[in-house]
Image (cartoon, rainbow, N blue to C red):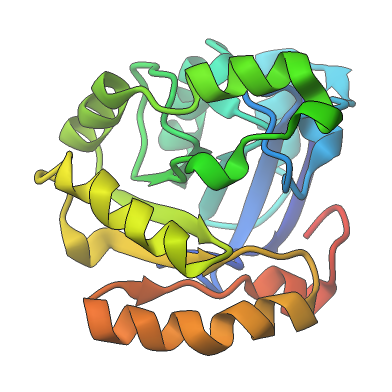
Length: 228
C-alpha cells in the first residue's frame, strides 16, 4: 500500500475533535477536489510502498487508543481490510475518513463521510480531464447507504457559500435514513481568516437548522502543514 505519512497528532474535525490519534494517510484518490488541502496525497500523490506489517508496526509505535485512516482516499486500497483487523486486534478505535464513493468490508468504529458537493468540482482551466471524472464519480448513493447501514458514522459537508447549504438539504432529502444529529457543516478554507469569515455565518446557520458546526481546529492549532 502506498503511504504518504504516518504520524501522531490531535483530531481536528468532527465529533472526536481534540482526541489524540495516530494517523495513516494513504497516497492516492479517485477524486480531484479543487480545494483539497492535501494535494500531496491526491493531485500529486507522494509516498512509499509499505507492507501491511510495516504499517501496523509504525502505527503501533504511538501510544494512542484512536487510529485515523485518511488520505487521499483510503478506501481505494484493499490492504485497508487487514490493516483494520490488525488495529482492532490491538484495541484501537478506528476512524476512516472517506468521500463515500468506494466500499470495502472492514472493521470500523466511526465512518467519517465527507460527500463532495458540486462546489468541489475543478474548473476546465485547472483540470479539464479530471473535471469530467470527478463529477461522474463524486456521488455514489449505493455506497453511502451501505456504509451507514454497517457502521456508526458522521457526515461532514464542506461549505463555501449559502447555496452550498441548500445543496446539503437536497442531498439529505434523498437519504432520509441519515440521522440529522450526525450531520456537520464545515467551512471551506485553508487559513484562519477564511475559516473565520465563513464560520461567522455558518455557525449561526447550523444552530437555526439543527446541524452541528464543524470547525477545522487543526488549521487553528498548527496551520496548514503535514503531520497535523
